[in-house]
Length: 269
Image 1 (cartoon, rainbow, N blue to C red):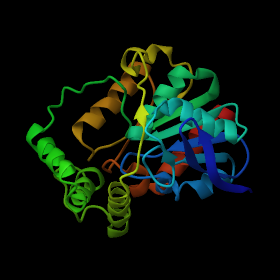
Image 2 (tube, rainbow, N blue to C red):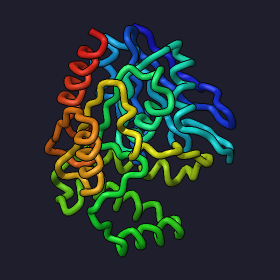
Image 3 (cartoon, rainbow, N blue to C red):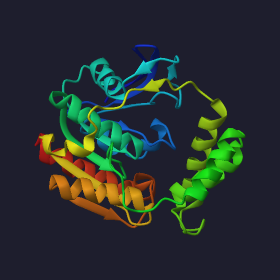
């Protein structure tokens, strides 16, 4: 088994990247309330059979970026290139699910399969009505740089799940997520200016030509659940539902690793 960590140069920045194991490749892309550390529990079982690539996206973790326009899809491909990987199974959580889906549509020749873990679909608008007053309050705290309030709120919303008790999730998981959120806010890192996929994924799902697996958490917020079910129904992909909120792989680490290994085996043999 091999391990490599370091910076991968990209236009206007450098991606902190870790590569573990050997064999057919799996690339893990983190959520917007985390960094590559969110996959720590999955890397050992996956890297026993696969080359596992993960990186901090711009604005997160140890990655650095200038105030430049960039493509999240091209960044992901740069990580694959650095690992010497032609094709990989892409696994994206939350915001990472949007990035991996968009990358699959833009660079289909680089993707062996796709797993969306509580992920979104670029351009998709859920019929679930957002609580505008709540998000207005969040915006006010962002403008005031009230990072502690935001970390508390986002931990409750994304880790516990809307309307759920703070005791539903094990304290170590809550501490991890809270710490990642607070660390990202306090760092105030330059994240660059991402160029969206054009046209967006929502009208292009018929282009998907690789195996797809969708995971959603039943305690997640309604828009994310709707997006996952829409992706599965539109593409005909299998849908796995977990008794979790947004951070599925943190709440159910063994089950997620097992599902990923089974899915990878169905692709790679």
